[in-house]
Image (cartoon, rainbow, N blue to C red; front, side, top):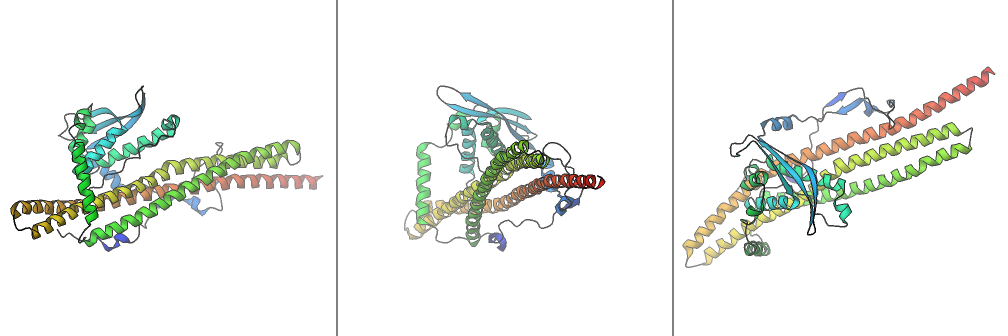
Length: 421
């Protein structure tokens, strides 16, 4: 029942990222929004560096994997009864327990939910990667928007690949069924019935109300970490969405701002060239801003929101672990106070003691694995966002510097012409 304590830094720095980064001097080769070469900004020291994002551990892990899963090719299905989207799930494996080395099936979102629920029932204290939320319908058009479908496809692909990387979940019978069986309906019927699920829910609620008599310090520290992590992720997620909204508003202003200078140039012959130059700069900065918004929306936002959902998953795992321990404590107290029928009750207590130990050990192992993945994912997203920010500001800086150089050149020509005359 007693397990090794987790390191004391578990409640310390939330993202204890590696401090050493590989930096490599290079000559940057970028271009402006219209495809012309972009002059390197002499004022930007960051222009001399790039971050090396290659991760040798990930490459080694890919070499050792024996099962690969891809989610792609979404298709819409519309009928009089329902409308839904299916995704192709392609599996390639060298595992001996599979009858073939390659499988291809089609799955809808409900099938992914079925897999997740089966895994949670069989492995209550393993950390299962979250699925994207079930869509709350606002309109049929929005539901089948290409961006929404692609975002969900990526999330479903990530969900399955996190399972393939897990040493226990990847060997689950239900996972194999999900990947290989054409139809899941027969397997759905084999799951626990409604009354059984209700009984489990009621028992969990009773254990939750009863609470724990004692909680191992390591799990109390984990709980504190999870609560803190959840608050931080929710805050960063909200602020990031607010920043993107402000960037969109700024981009819209630029799109209205640029044409004004071109219209102005038509009525100011002597100012026509600098006015057109300013208008062109504004247009190019508008395009760069649009690219930056797209990068934030496709790289940073999905990762942040994914870990907002991960925090909820962790809370659920901690509750399930606590419920198992609470049930053990209740049975143990009943055994101590009962004068008869102790033999049968002792068997239940022994069984629950084993369940508690298994739950604790499973969570301990997965906790370390999850934190390693979390740090790698967030670190990658932050580095990518930082690099894109540098790229964005350098390009905008170069646009305006090019304008200044052109205007200074014209001024010199005008002065030389005046002196010659």
